[in-house]
Figure 1: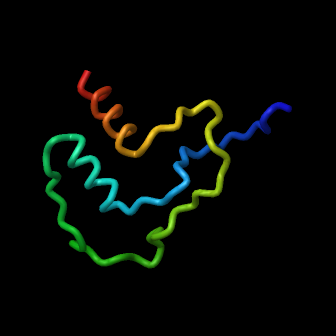
Figure 2: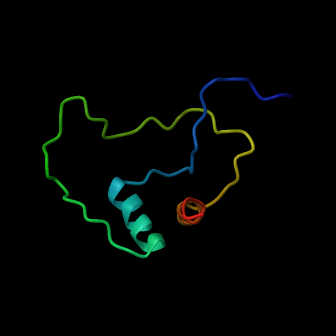
Length: 79
């Protein structure tokens, strides 16, 4: 049975990550510390604090950990 065609896919991992967790992985994998001013501005009424993650996964997308994905992205961007 063929997968249903849609114009919208998600790169999902099965778990949510906070922005702080994501940037900690980028710090670690990138080998340097990002200069971030946390809470430098207040939140706005329309800020999204819990992202939508229930969409269909991108077919054929390889399953990698967050760390592997960030490492591959950083290596690719250095080429």
